[in-house]
Length: 84
Image (cartoon, rainbow, N blue to C red; front, side, top):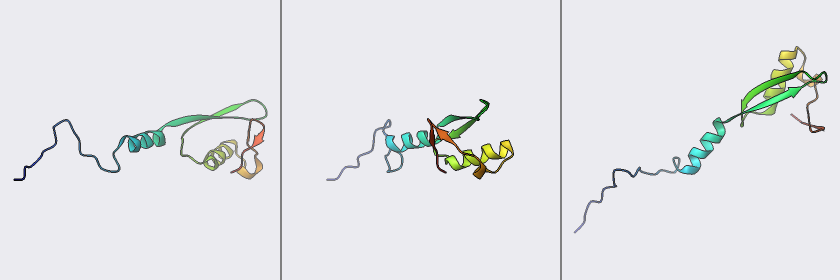
């Protein structure tokens, strides 16, 4: 004799993409951070970007706002140069 077993109403079917790890990864990807760029005169420019945004995009956007080419700028973090 075989019985049909139905899931309880409060249980959702689980597939590989919808576990707690997948939703945490999706939340982290959509999280934004604020990056502040300070020039040598002390003026700050802020960028709100996703954690997955490449720094090259931030560099080129900053250069565009300042009206210079991005290869004319150097970006430092704690005194160390940040490569593109």
